[in-house]
Length: 282
Image (cartoon, rainbow, N blue to C red; front, side):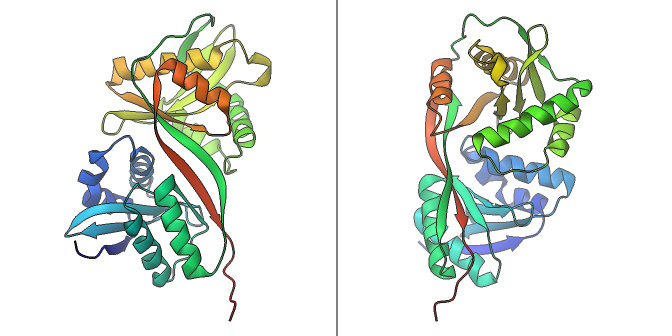
C-alpha cells in the first residue's frame, strides 16, 4: 500500500490546487474543509494546511486556521489519521484540538495524546445531515428574505447568543456577519419583523451548508426555524442548483427531530476534541 506522505503548506490556494479532486470526490463530507480553504484562499488569512498523500493522490487533509484554533480534519482511514497526527507532532507544531468525523478524530486524537503525553477531552458532538426529499412544514407565518445591512447589529447579537446556547467556540462574529451581508449569504425569516436568522455558505461541488440558525426565545415554538430552513433549502436548490447540508448537536433532540422531519438524513457523527497542555512525566 505504501506509507502516507504528509506535507505542510502555508497557503490555502496551494492546498486547493493539490487536493481539488479529493475535495470534489465527496462534497458533503468535505464541505467544512473545502469552505474554510476557499475562504482563506480568497482572504489570504493565515493558516497551516497538511496534506496526506499516497502515490501523489490526496488521502486526507488537516488544517489549522486561524492559528491556535482547533484543527479541522477530513474523513480518512484511521491509520492515516494517526500518521498525520504523528507527522504534525514531529514537525514541532502544537495543536489545541481537532474536530471532524468521529472515527477519524478519535484516531487522530488518540495518537496525538500519545505523542504529547497529554489528555484529550471531547468538547462537542454533532451529527452531519444531508437533505433528501424536502418536506415543507406547515403553520408558520411569514416569508424568507435576504438580510439587509441595517440588521447588522441584530444579527451580531443573535449569532453571539447562538454561540452561547450551543457552546460553540466563542469569537467576535462581526467580521463573519459583515462578510455574510456583503456576499448576501445571511437570511431572515420575516413575520412583521425579523424572527429567525440563518446562514448558507457558497455552494461547493453542488453543496451549501446551512448554519447559525437562531430564533430568539420569545419567538420560539411558532415554527419559524423550520420554515426558515425549509425555505432556504428550496432557494438554494432553485436559484443555485445546490443541495443542503447542516450540523445538529447530538445533545439537542429538538433540532435533530426538526431536521429529520424536513427530510434530512444522517450522514455521520462529528466530534471535537480539546488537547491539554503538554506534560512531561520523565
